[in-house]
Length: 399
Length: 162
Image (cartoon, rainbow over all chains, first blue to last red; front, side, top):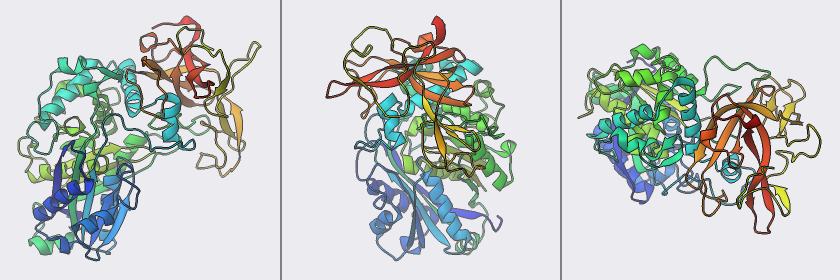
């Protein structure tokens, strides 16, 4: 473990589901589980890094301090991060920066969500200066529309089929069967996916992830603290990289919630597109490449999007994701299992908790504690995730 | 205007754009069709859509002046989708809801992809990535005052089919 590494001493989750309860209840369960896993008390925590969402109230309410108060004021310092679906990774980065700067030794990273039924919709009111509001009003461009645009390109450019997309769902559903935190724990057949109702053509209901309630938390510490607390760093998972890169101009792939891409009329597109660049920066910081990765947790907002991530992660060449999937390489037992947790297909998305949940899974995997879904010999894992407005993240966890 | 039938067809009463300053309605004449209105930087020449004021999006350009510019009316289909469920408000959905397609079209001169609804009656089955598309205008919804609110749409050029 190098001096730049931050130790992950504890991980915890509240199972994903749909109950509509106060999101702080879920957060408390996750926090207490992470503290118990670390063998630490709440009063040992020096900093709380909260991951925010817009859905449970105004930013000051859905914040690090919300959880600090819920756990009982101790004078702990707090930070609060909003980065859409990448909020959890930004919260981890805030905690990590505090630790590496020497401002604290022990931090709690936490995200929790309660989601409404149906399509995500923009914040209410008539807000004609908000592109997120306007894309719904003027186009009816829901999130699945953007997933569908990306999926259609895979079909028309690379020959992807509805059955390929369905195979991703079948794989992830199988992975999630034994995961006690997954919302859906049921095998799914290809025929069920391809006969489910079309939501946004070419994607069907079972191609698109649900929205869920859930919470995830991490206890992260300096290497010195971990060594003092445990006597040794053997078998301790660590954060080897956190990337929260934004796009480089011009961003030439149409991403939600945009009406248009940037222009490449004057400035040539960068060598790496946005999502590949997010992952690349994490690889660079960790000093690894795609061949060093034992498993990946990626944001399968849709089945087709998981295939895009194979390419952004460098697991195959652009246009090669369908072949990689069909080969079985990304299933448990394959060369580089993707979404061993079951992914969003088995969880549904709980926005501020999701990027943290990805790190929880990698931690369990590199510790060899992922019962029923363990990737044999896992030592290095990578996450990938993307949200609205140019937010994205990638975290490398190693042991 | 699209000439397709149905209760959401071309405007017959008063009509106004659903949003000001993002597209022209066009008029008579050989090249009088509707156009998207974007922005162009007078210094570096890059483009932006939706139209905006202020800083040029090019990080290497320090211009603070963007000028309105009419975009190309034709381009190449980058991708498309088709909604089979009514989007939530603030979308004003037809009742009963009819599935409709959306098209993202790449404009060569501007070096951009611009999303829009497909013209009324154009369905996903009619579309294919790479085909030629042209800008049109259609009715998005009729507001509480009986005014047809108009929106830009993309339609295949010259009856090209899948």
